[in-house]
Length: 434
Image (tube, rainbow, N blue to C red; front, side, top):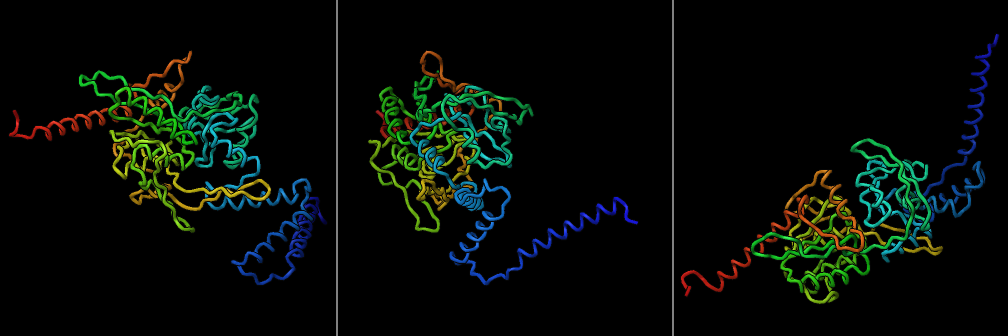
């Protein structure tokens, strides 16, 4: 006698058998000998797979040749490394807008960390910055959609959009485990890359003048803007400079090389690349005018990346600047952007950066000469202090509460005092006084 339970088991077994017989029928076609290095053989496999998906996949709304092609390209590039990406036409246009210092969005620099969408830093004067988002915050949801299965490019696409649109970010702050929704409005973000140029306040009886300038990222006008800021500080009597690259995510390589040219002689090698194709050297040009020779300290931290690391590595190796702070991010690979016929593009890693001293940057970073860390509270206070004052007032930068800046200023003042004493000794050698 067959019970109800036995009947269900028999029915299930019969269903599985039918399904497996269907699979075996699909696999019955004999495999062909194919050359794994032949583009023609392998494109044939891809084309056959796309044909079968178009023919048999249950949801025909997902099987246009364009959708399948784009999905295949996304998968191919994602398998290579975290920085290689396929960009649909709108993503490619968005990337081009970034380099012009203006784009629509929330103003947060993000990365994937342990599989979670994580804020590296909120850009100043942006909705994310004004809302109080912090480095290390994890974005769990964007407008209610989980970020768990999104690629970095997909997440960035969701963060961007038309100015005036509202976006809700669900944020988890690892330090407190607190989960909170932030309601933000997209704006056209105009990135001012050179900020806070000033002579630092001091109670130094020697009245040594140490200047301070911050570069937020490297874009087309950065070198020209920095040159103007330095010209003004030099007229004000600046004797040494602190150049702040903390939280600078990089930008255009050409811009970082041009900024290097403000501190190095013409024709100096700043960075070189090596990959499958012949390597290339990037050298300083006359762009930016005169070369500065006064002492320089660079402030760097874990969020100083890409172009920041090129500049930091060059000035460190060539003994043109002392680095103070923390080891940098370690984004030292070259992505070449190659446009495709339909307006899409490949962002393909084609080489790695090497500093003038042949030090690799990628996944290693640039180590500081003087290591100084910040507590989490000091870091939050530093970011909070970067809010622009109301009524157009100039923000006053101070080393108080900023151990990295304080250490850089002390080092530069010591350098100036030593240089001054050395000059006096040269002019008045021992035993030849009057």
